[in-house]
Amino acid sequence: MARSTEPAPSHLVPVALILLVWHGLLAADYVIDRFALGAPGWPALMALMPLDALWLNVTWALGVWLGLVAALFLMLRDDASVLLFFFAMAFEVALALGVFLAAPPVLMLPVPLAVILPVLVAFPLFGWLYARSLNRRGCLH
Image 1: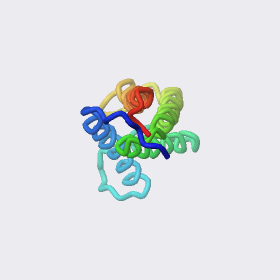
Image 2: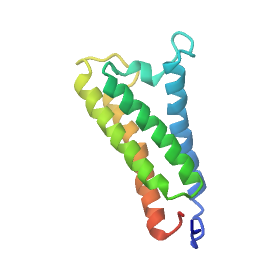
Image 3: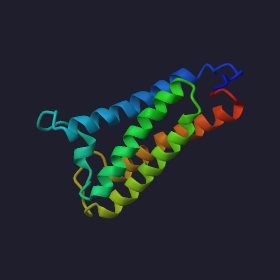
Image 4: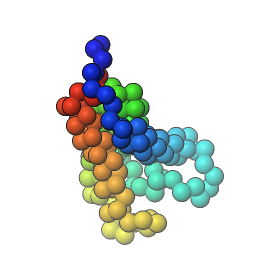
């Protein structure tokens, strides 16, 4: 594979680290909740969302893990991060729509569902736009 000739911008590492930490926290939340590793009362995001249907669990898992892999690839300056962030965003959008439609009218969360869902979509959307702009400039290989 050919290496890019453009030098990496100075903001690549901080942005990639922020995306990596965000998606890493979501991945840790997924593992802790999925395998019941947390203590009772653990403030898990996955446990608070109404993920009753199998397809909601699958879209949550794909959004979380594709976002984490995309952040890792962005850190390595790999252009596959563009496509991975796009699919992570698409799965988070599907999750947000499904959870919004399946949620009871009054869902008792510490933060309203209308705040959580856009944030879940915003991070992979930002990652996709950022990686796409770097790829167009030739900074990714």
